[in-house]
Length: 347
Image (cartoon, rainbow, N blue to C red):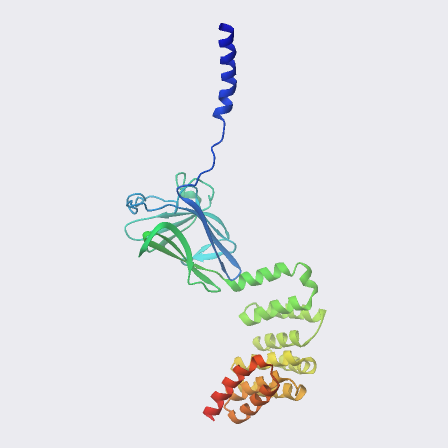
C-alpha cells in the first residue's frame, strides 16, 4: 500500500509542473488593437494603438487623471511612426518610431513623443527620453465610445492627426517638406539602374524647376540627362532652368535647339508651359508651329484654339476647335462642344 502511494505521488509531481506550464488559449482583449496610416507626399505616418471603451465611466480627470502622463490608448505603448522628418505643431521631429503620450490638463494638453517606443504604456515613462513635447488644445466632439486616431485635412504637404475619445478630441498638425523628401528620394533612386536613363535625370531636374529649388543642381542634372540622350524633353527642361537662373542668352540658344528637335507632344508641352506661365501671347507662335508641322493632328488644333481663346481671339479659336472636333475621337466631342457653346455665346 505504501509503495502504491509513493508511486502515485511521484507521478503527480511529474504531471503537475507540465499542467501548470500550459499556455492560455487566445481570447479577445478588452481594448483591441488598431492602426491607422496616412501618406503625405511620399512620407508615411502611422499610429499603432489599442482602443479602450468609455463603458459608462468618467474619463477625463478620473480614469485618465489630469497632470499625469498617459499612454494615449491602452495596453502597450501607443506608437507613432514617420518615415521622413516632419514638424508637429510647428516643432521639428526627426523621422523615426516614437512612444506617443499625452499630459492632459483642464486646459491645454502636452503631446509627448518619446524615443522609447516599446514600453508598457506610460508606467516607465522617463522625460529624459523625450524627442519632442508640443502643446495642443482639446476641443469638444461627438461621443466616441472607443478611443480612435484619424487623419484629416490631408494635402501633399500636411495632415491633421486627431485623437478622439469620449466627448473630447486633440488635433495635432503635421507638416512635411515634401519637395525635399521627393528630391532626396529621387537622388537615392538615381543611385540605381535609373541613373543610366536620360529620363530619370530629366525628371529630377524638371521637378526642381517646377518647385523652384536647387536650380544650380538642376542644371547639372539636366546636363547629365543630355549626355545620355539629347531630345526635346530635356532641352525644354534646360531652357526653363536657364530662364529661371536669369541666363536668358543661353536659354535663347537652347530654345533654337529645342525647336529643331522637338516632337509634337514636346512642342505642345512648351506651349502650355508658356500659356499657364503668364506668357499667353508667346504661346501662340509655338502652337501655330505645331499646327503647321502636324496639320492632321486634332490635338494641335485644340491646343491652338485654347491659346487663342485665352487672348480673346474668339473667332479664330472657334475655327480651330471646330477643326479639332472634325478629327477628334468620339470621347472628346462633348468637351469640345461645351467649349464651342461658350465661345459662340461670347463672340
